[in-house]
Length: 189
Image (cartoon, rainbow, N blue to C red; front, side, top):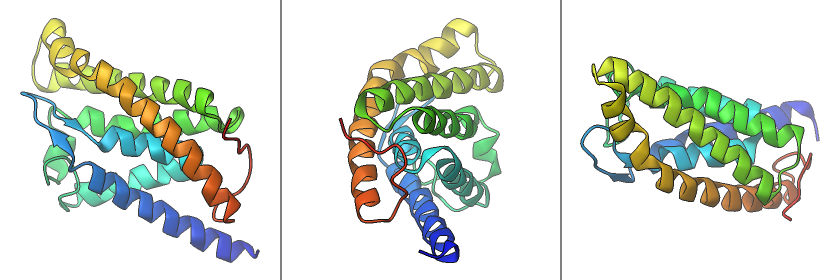
């Protein structure tokens, strides 16, 4: 297949994943400071399916769309105030999260066990950066920041990492079989 077609296909898939992140962001369970959302699940899926480069592009596109004011962030919100607000650290953490998760998979194999480990590492990156940002942006103590921005998300984060790994590896294998993605490092075992 010609490279201009491949580039166009990857641009379309990248944009599609930015939209998927925006859609899953609307699945929320409200909590006092930071809601539980489908954003991190979508970021894990982007990393697991697209890898480091295109997964990162999809997250950056999602953040640009939200920063421009389109209500794609949790609870139908958007704008720069959201990015620079108390939960902005979680949003910005998606960039290193998706890159590192995808990079781990590209350097190893796209298998469920490795994807689960990579997604757990990604979850920890998101929670760590988000909690540090929350502490300073909301003028919280470390104890309050950890209690409201880290601890409540551990169990749910593990479940989302499990789901992103299982779905991501399976979808990636199917997309590669359909020649929608390169077959590099594909394995569903």
